[in-house]
Amino acid sequence: MDWLKEITAAVTVCDNQGIIVYMNEKSEQVFENDGGKDLIGRSLFDCHPEPAALKVKELLSNGSTNVYTIEKNGKKKIIYQSPWRNEKIIGGMIEISIELPNEMNHFIRG
Image (cartoon, rainbow, N blue to C red; front, top):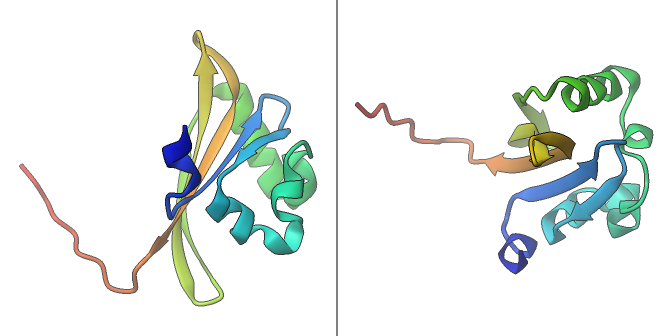
């Protein structure tokens, strides 16, 4: 998936035990102060405080999706966390983090 490597959204993927198995270039940049690409092979749970770690464990166990927005360092982002599956069995989770512009159009389509 070479196209995923250079998109402007941060994409991080873990297996069903919470071990980080993939980070695209943007994800490596976003988490540079935490180790960047050296986080691959490490536990996602070591990178999150307890409430967030519990949420990730919940997503991995029940297959639900978690979507929310944050603001950090003056940048707004939408975070999309969802399990990925292999033959209907949860294989892990993907997190996609997209920076949002301060002003953004919203369209209602019918």
